[in-house]
Image 1: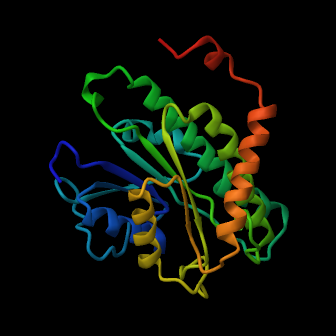
Image 2: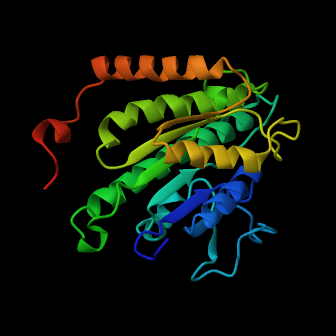
Length: 255
């Protein structure tokens, strides 16, 4: 790729197995990388990616859920934002576990989506971005949207994220291209008994994105390939029928 077409990609949850696998896959495609991680000391290892930053390297930025607004200056230059961070409290269902699950798995992702969509709207008339593809947001909602994950708080928070994503996509689809990542169990710290390899999953994600798919499913469960498209279609129809049309859209595009 040349400098003129090389995308800038920011990935949250970059310290996890899938986050690092996605960094490696994007690196092989020549992307400029921004690794967003909650690890104070940065990433310990990301084989195949030069962590030095600059040029072909990778910038690492430490952040935590709740600090989304602090990322605004960084996201202004991003072409693809991958919302991948998550928290699995497994069987816990106390008040703090539920609160943390909703905050990290659902509300933080929604805030990032809204922040990025607003930044994209502001730069619409910026000549520096003329001719560039529509910015993209990839959201990892996981297979927990439609299948048991053996973690009630995780399932509830991920299903909420999926519902919110479907609802907000009605208004934001003209600003950003939204891709939903529905992933089955892969090996990671969140799921050490996962049966899929994170690097293989990441490669499949980018392959399906290259095919132009917005609903990206990677799992060993054949039922998900049936239930998730039907669920997404059902939500779209329901929200189209009963969600009030925003006044901004009714009056036309912003000037």
